[in-house]
Length: 407
Ligand SMILES: Cc1cc2nc3c(=O)[nH]c(=O)nc-3n(C[C@H](O)[C@H](O)[C@H](O)COP(=O)(O)OP(=O)(O)OC[C@H]3O[C@@H](n4cnc5c(N)ncnc54)[C@H](O)[C@@H]3O)c2cc1C
Image 1 (cartoon, rainbow, N blue to C red):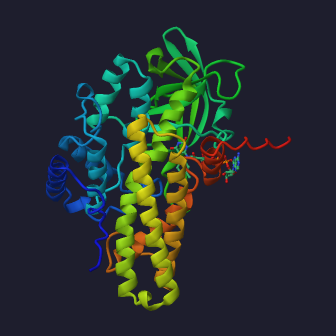
Image 2: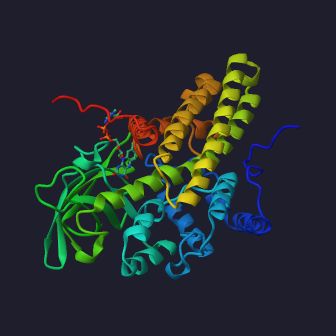
């Protein structure tokens, strides 16, 4: 008997969770229709031209009560359990739902607000996210601060009831669509490294903020440079204490590495299933080398799944994602690069022929081609592979810090 590859048999569910899964399935059957179908492969900054559709899907999710699901009810959540969140992510991936538009706010900034924000900030910032009213973007990277994030130079000074911000952020995904940016800025003049940084929320719709698109090799402009020239934000938009922004920044990064794993893993299950079909249809399953690599990919996916479940279970006990989240990020991004390279070999010379999304007889092939190109960036964002290895070596294995290069 062939084992189902749709991922639904992975977790044993209680009666209540099985009912929840059925509720999600029914909702998806009723709402994931017409234009929302056929968009599943389209995620990331290289897929910018389906933005309006992604926003519409976000509104649909909000109306269904599926945003901020695990948050307390007082902030608009439904206090869903981690298992229910997993079930929801799994069902969306299985059904092929469109990629999220506003994940930066809900999955990256909100955890920092929940952990470090005041009650007033939670009341003010979280409900609009649940209703899909505000789009946030992430302002961490700068030309001199990528992997070395503690090198942030963008600064903010206090003037009365406001912070005044000057400097530059780069690679800011969807800044051109966003209403607000959550940024790491230097608030203590003369401070170095992690000290003196703060986590500041800044409205983008003001004349002293300029958002300039960066064009990618796919011809899209999903990410941007953002320039602040004495831009202003209210003093109550500082999350956590002044000068302790590094801690809040790490809360966001921990969630970025850990939660991204879930959504990716389930979409990989779907891609694996599609590639198996594609390989069968094209006869590639009779090529012993390709067949061997397909099996290796499947084994990798199983390892990913078990490791992710283990670290999620651990996070449930510890209440937070530890440095082990880096193992998941390192593993899935490298696995997906190798998997999409295999997909290109299955397609052979046809991999070079692009068709438009969703049309033509072979939309799955086109999806694989886009996934292959997009996978190049996956070992870079949310911390490069080398940085994940540094974290694992120092904070998981307890090895000595690597020597700093002599300058
Ligand atoms: C698709 C995409 C979307 C992004 N979206 C956002 C966003 O919305 N907001 C945001 O703030 N940023 C975003 N980024 C930026 C991303 O976070 C940075 O690209 C990443 O942190 C790496 O920084 P860098 O590009 O400056 O490379 P660098 O840090 O300059 O690294 C260059 C190379 O040197 C290696 N390296 C650096 N330091 C070490 C070390 N100590 N040991 C070993 N090797 C090292 C790196 O691994 C890498 O291979 C995005 C990036 C991509 C690709």
